[in-house]
Length: 257
Image (cartoon, rainbow, N blue to C red; front, side, top):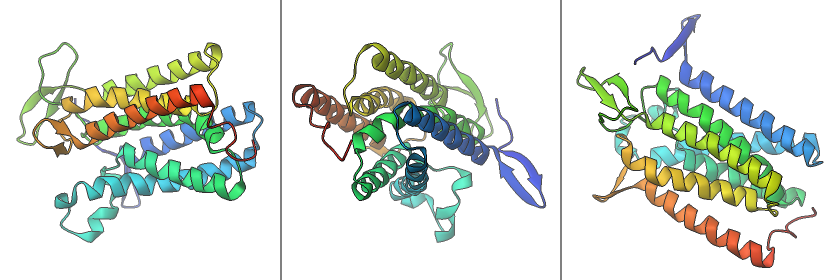
């Protein structure tokens, strides 16, 4: 299936589905984070301030990560800033957003892990919605397949091809992650920091297995993809930190709360 990446035109300006969907993803994720923060008794204005900085840093990080690992794909410096044409890497967004949150919490003397726990399901929701922007932009699809789960696209040669809908795989995986975090928080009595670490581990696990199915991933050697390596590293790091926190509760005294 192919749809036009242009949603509509107004005053000679083309508005792309990609931009609309990313905006919806940011707003939806931010609303969920604010809802969870208020349920935790956190100050709403402080949370909004943090979210603004996180969104800005996440967008910058997402674009910077993609560009740095795809420098050969740009012939003009101006093209680097054309984010509406696609090219946002989620791991860059996570790094950028987490860094901004860490700095914000240090300045405000707040607990980083409490904020991170609140934001984790919201980030998953934003990722799940945002993947449909990839669909609209005809990117992040998979390698050819005859599986019963497949989608048809017009490839670069103008031919009809059946491929893995990897954007859909990740969307579903992220939605399952939200459900998992809800169940663990509701019945599992997760300690501070563990919701965020579970998110990192869950996403890393899914991305490690989905990435080899993607047709547009940046390779690392003959057998792996760059994002697959990053996923594995973050998965292992999150599991180790989770285990250490279970034993020593290292995140309880970060900041005032």
